[in-house]
Image (cartoon, rainbow, N blue to C red; front, top):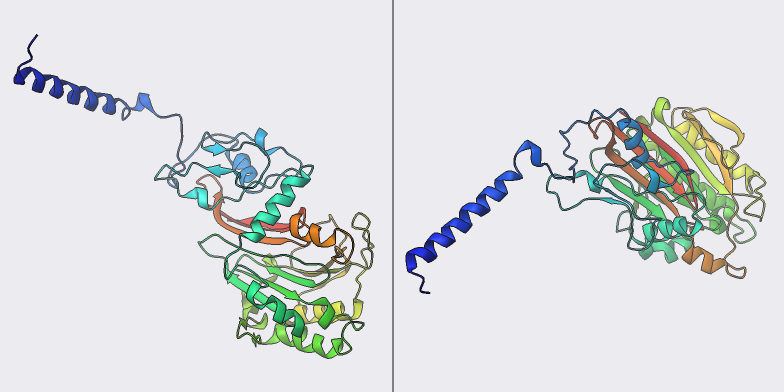
Length: 356
């Protein structure tokens, strides 16, 4: 059988018309894809939306994220592991929110999942996100040089973090406007047994450090807390000093500060710089919530790197790891009406806040 040119052309034209018709079917209301996008202009009238969105942003530590009633674009295949974290569909060109939602925080019983989450998160910190930059750590430690980071909480998601913390003191100050995070070496600034000049170093590297900008021996500019005081109104400010506990059993902290005089002086200075913010009386026990509008102190039992397995624990588990994460949107009826931040320390979420 012979095919003439006009027959061949007719067949090609027919195939083209059929293709156009097939594509048009997907554009009619009755042929919507099951995969929903998260356009920031979309609304959702589901009665449990607020609860579902809050769960996506701050999953309860006692719930299994895999059981959360997520939208069809929500992908969760188990506890967080290397290379496998909860994400939203990235292929949809209208889905820009996936970059802003926090990763799921594994269930409290998933110890390995939380260890992996913290190790991967801290190892993945980029330049400017490390509170103790790798390129300055050795020299800063030898000189006892403190380091800090600060940023306004605006319209871009970001994170900060640090690791290998096994005795040093940390300062967390967060409001609805700004975050300020500091790290202060134990051996050089607090412990007289390792540094006979620890008292003088404490005055320079802690008290004076908070009062005015400091430039490290490697030329890194460190921000002083004092210049940001106006960004920390009492109504939304959490201020926490996390310092070494007297005890040595991580499961049974004494809730007693190892360096009481210096921590008292540090808390007084933070209070003064923040407009005489009230100081919480005593130490906040592990597991209890910190109060807004106060300078609080909490303790942690340090992992001894000189003990058997100590350095391995600091390298491969959540021990000594800390992450701060800020998300400008991701909760609320229109999925952009609430901002949120959280602080993860070792295997716990110790602080969090969200607001419109």
